[in-house]
Amino acid sequence: MIRTSGLVKYYGRIMALQGLDMTVPQGAIYGFIGQNGAGKTTTLRILAGLLLPDGGAAEIAGYDVVRHPRAVRGVVGYMPDFFGVYDDLRVGEYLLFYAAAYGIRGQRAARLRDDLLELVELGDKREAFVDTLSRGMQQRLCLARSLIHDPQVLLLDEPASGLDPLARVEMREILKELCRMGKTIIISSHILSELADLCTHIGMVTAGRIVRQGLLHEVLAAAHRRNFIVRCYGSLAPALAVLEAWPGVEIINTTEEQVEFSLSDGPAQVAALLKEMISSGAAVTHFAETQQSLEDTFLQLAREGDKA
Ligand SMILES: Nc1ncnc2c1ncn2[C@@H]1O[C@H](COP(=O)(O)OP(=O)(O)OP(=O)(O)O)[C@@H](O)[C@H]1O
Image (cartoon, rainbow, N blue to C red; front, top):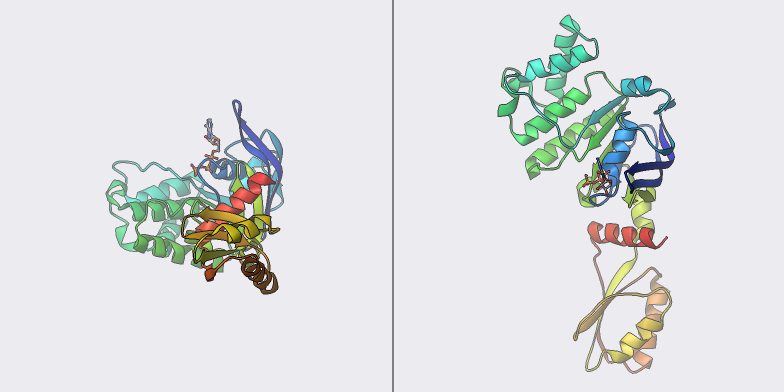
């Protein structure tokens, strides 16, 4: 449905995209996760046909974004991370204005306006001035605007940014409804946990490259190193010496009381490691696994991506 290969984009000397390969299957809600400056907006703008790449290729619903920009704009709805609203324009007029830009007028436009306002739960705000809406309502109006030409694909740049928790839940419910309607959706965010219970797929971008992508649960499972904490009675040095020599161990943090480390091995290796610590003289009082948060998983993936 959406595919980029080796996508490259420069801003002057800055190489914002460094060969980005993205694959988004039809009907997916694809969480496009990356820290500030990773290249999310640049990728989405290229996919929306608003920016030309300097190298590589991108295709949406069979259309090449460089060779068929008009066709691409017809199948894509784009919601930017920053958008302006107009003074002295009512909510209903705002949507009619965008409908007219797509050549939709008259009764058809009025019906569309009402249906879209219903979908984004702004039915009772039709006559309100756009600049009096709350941030969450403006985001939903912008989403309605991006749906005006019934696009198959939605590109949403940080749609939940600046929203309070309730407004986030409302946005999430609308996106799930759009997914049920058969849309393919890319949502960018720098917060993995924000997308984890919404997305079917995930792509993690670091420094202009995708470092992991695929089904959400597969990406998380592949990334899932397990974190442990070990404490000793007396010196930690014997335990630390074993950890430093053990293949696959990454020491995360050492204090006077404890060592925190991560390991990707299964239970047999974990047991062997503990046994080795004890036989090398460590008086282990505590050896336990800690819960790794989604954010930790993301940071770890980003680190692994940087090393690759
Ligand atoms: N118009 C521009 N001129 C110069 N550099 C730019 C421009 N737009 C983006 N960049 C740079 O390109 C890189 C990627 O930026 P991009 O906005 O695509 O990242 P992002 O992942 O969307 O970040 P954010 O979450 O902060 O929006 C960054 O280093 C950024 O500073």
